Length: 299
Image (cartoon, rainbow, N blue to C red; front, side, top):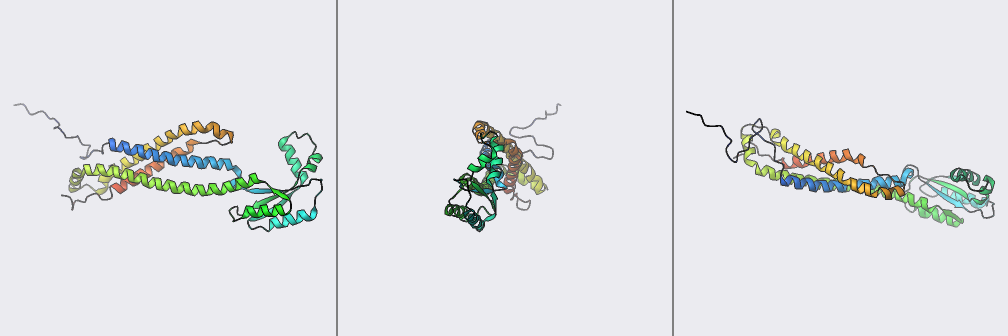
């Protein structure tokens, strides 16, 4: 008598060794990956903007100076007026030091910078104003730049407004960096919740299998680990997709950024996006599997 052929019954899926298979990667997971990738793309775009702003400000971030110019229309210097101006600038809260730059020093610097001014150093020095270089102790001090402008106007001097704009830009970039961290944190929590809800649906669909595994003595972490790994894979995949989606924006804006001497480097975001995606994916999986049914409560 022939023995019956060993077949797999209908609607039964083969299991991995140990009696368990990894959660399926279906429509819900694909939708979660797309949503998380878009969120990570937004985070990457924010930090590319911060990177561009930092490059635009350049070395001013580390050492900010403001220059005040005292006119010498007749080539002479009003010693009393220049002394009072220097003392008044020095007394402004937020100004660390005031250094006088003579016309001769400015002329030598300008000749080295322009190379061909059409005048010798003495002729150029006679046309340049007396310059004061202000080192700032705290560029965020209230009314600092207004006080500098007021002191300069009382002595018929002028402030380099371009430098003031750069100093204020540095202040706003510092604030924007905090906002970027805040936005990244909020988006990370949202991404973790999206992945958590996706994996929670998978858990509910496999509730009977999980109950059975727990009744047979499977440890809680043995049950949770495949879902945590799936969350990490979802996050890494979304991070890689977000990084790839940033390239069209970077390449499309290169010509515009080059005009202001800014060069965006998208490669520096690869690891942060991958690691960040893995972290939010793992966090979402931990949320989803936090209440795995124990053997005592399984029915």
